[in-house]
Image (cartoon, rainbow, N blue to C red):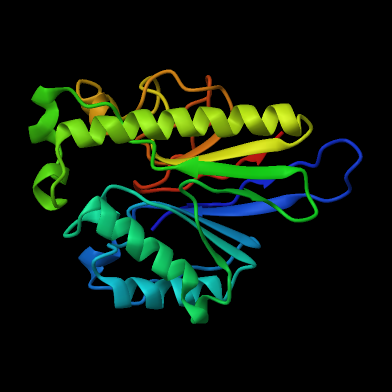
Length: 247
């Protein structure tokens, strides 16, 4: 279990800061959804994928209900493992059902086509899975195509194109309409190849990252290292945690 709590400094003229707690890759399905102690450290919890599986609906719901009760807002970005044992369509439908669950008390947001403007701040949170582009000969490097129903390389790459186009459009729209807002982008897959992966995986980056995305404050689940160039990536999803202040 790994989490980080960076603090977004206020824009000039504001008097407050906003803290966001990040969590990813705890793979509750491997833990048979046993209780995982997570100490609330911020008003917003950002879950950046590979938390559980949509197919384990009841167990995943109970976990999210428990967590959302301790935060003002819980924001979920889907990872690839969220869709294991279901199809893409089934998984997305389950995610929307989770958001509508009465016990969530409207605290859960599924960050796929949405954005979240943090109340009383100039901070906007954007995000999606940001699927990586995968070459045909990379299929043996990921279990996704065997464990997600009706999921093929072409589907994965099409989703990458949609994710990237939608994300760039949302970022541009936010910048044009409200240039004073500070943007935090959350994706499960890393937004760059360089300096986001452990050296041992450098020959297979397409399973974990996408190339050439905008330089912003970025948080990602499927990272294997720290990046200080282009995008700021917190090292989560592998042992250890990091904390930093966004400036």
